Image (cartoon, helix red, strand yellow):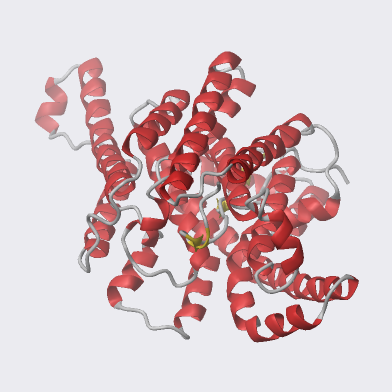
Length: 487
């Protein structure tokens, strides 16, 4: 069976997910391997940044291919929210959660609202959501082609302002205020109603003037929503970073816009030298802040400096290899791991926490090849649960998203035409294949929907052969919960 056109992105998601799982699991199993690898590579941050790079590459491309903000947001929410809500609800049954914290998690911005995280990995989805807000706002304002400038602006600002003052806006009321702004901004951003004109005024206006006035009013409401959401996202990124991301909080969107810049260069929308210059600026900004963070911890040694360079090389090298091999066949298992990577990402930390006593005991008693059997057993359980979550939570959510898109995003004529085509015009074999594809969670074009994305993403949606990224990535450690920043 031929593979999907974007299977190489699934392979990159798989690599990112495995790096993140290794970063967390190696606190219990494979400790010897961690003691060696941690001296030269920060696996968790490498996986996270790879997720963000993939998400930045594909998310804006998906939006611009369809040119419809309402379709974009319905697809994103249907892709990310079902499993996110299920995981958050299950975790909330075991930990205390305030009303303010619940609202913060519903916005998918808890990391930027000063709310205690239900599970550490959801911090990446806050940056994913902020990126969506910025991308959608720039698209509505017709500034979406300025990806290289956006990446450079975030990178330069990130270096100039580091370390940011943490949580300057955080408070019990902030989640409620942000939720209200999100609802208002998204409603305005996706508004489609025509401006109302009285019969007398309509008769008095010429056709051209009437069209210009109506078009201007139709653009004004989404533009206002775009400005509101753009201001919200940038304000949170600048003024309400968690202490774990005061050094790289602005560099994460810079990395994501670097992915977008690479896509534009590949598509011939911008000169390749612009993409190269952008990558150089963002890479220099990452190393600058990583070194500065190490210096602030009195840990800027040659070994740790080399670790920062190696981590950056792994991120960029993995993406470069994937891009170079995009027309080659990807191993099926790796592609499948990429498809379920969002489930892997959200499930693995709660699963590790649940099995922590057993994993700690096995890590102390088992060594060598026998320990690998314990790792294989954990991965088998994780992959099985991820398949189950993907099959029975993610895919139904995506099908619901397609139904909502047909109901609220597609023009009436297009909806009727699609219905008639599906019912009467498609050959029986094609209708059967379409039904079977939908049972497997595939889109109308046969390309499976997956996120980024996340995140991640991380964590995404594939329509017309283009897959969203998804964002998803890994959780705090040491300064960011358990892992230090990607030095």
